[in-house]
Image (cartoon, rainbow, N blue to C red; front, side, top):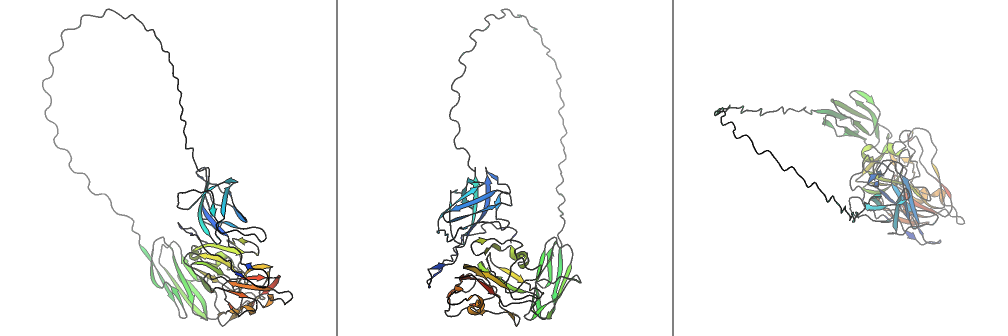
Length: 462
């Protein structure tokens, strides 16, 4: 994700997924989101070393993690501390006090940038808090108030009582009365009155270099034209084909390079050119925008080798804007992090600061439609509609979940929920008025019995 978290990067979130719908069975609610924490961690006023064990406990759950960077947790990586319910049917009440421990020792806590230390912090579903932790952070406030009250009271009481009684009574009565009566009365009256008033003021000039960016028809490169770049700086270009077209070739300084939606010149110390051409055909990749705040994100298609991991899907400029990514394994939240392969029919919660763009490159191998086992209880899914006319269209909930309907005696899904997090929000009860599931989004599905969900997309797409 991002390379650095900004000061005040996180704010307390109020996202709650506790929708309840009354049906044949008892009231059911979507899982509680974990409360994630990150910040500085100190031991005895010194940065806590790598592999420091941090735990959190709260009635109904808790969390633990091991630090990977000295003096901090979750600031420069995804290694945040997740506090969530633990155990079957466990729940954590909003505002319940969370206690934190560093290597088993109770820690003081404070919100980042604030001065007041506390012994606990209140739980909030979906919360994401900059929280500093410390142990041994106080110093003694008392100093010794007693000092030795005895001093030696005896000292020598005798001293020599005799001193010499005679001293010389004569001394020289004459002293020299003459000496030099003249002294030099002149001294140099001139001194250098000028000092250098100028010093070299020249600096090594920083010349801009120029990158010429052009594109052929049926697409665009941004920025375009002649772009000045300060010596030693980076410059990125975004390449977007029109609908029904894909990137044909990218030439950098006249030489072909790998086709990519974003090309970056690093550490520019010379002039360059970049030229892009496009060709008609199936898109080489698909993009989807994630808005500011929480998003539910999925891929409708199997991704190609080298494009299937989160760090491949989000370019560096987008990773810097992503605060947290969370997955749901059917019973608990987890942080997928790097080298997590995003597959069709799965979805992730992604919290973005401002916005982020995902690039999805379909696999070019022959594959069957995707399948996934859904467990009894809540499942977080992403739709996988088939590719048609240059894209992926919405499908009704009945079509999307046709393989997990079950039968009257052994029903499959009972409830489907679309949280309103940068997507339409609604709740659906089995066999109610139909709603659509959108590609690239995510949905909660409550299963009465385990079933196998099947998608519709296949590769290659052309």
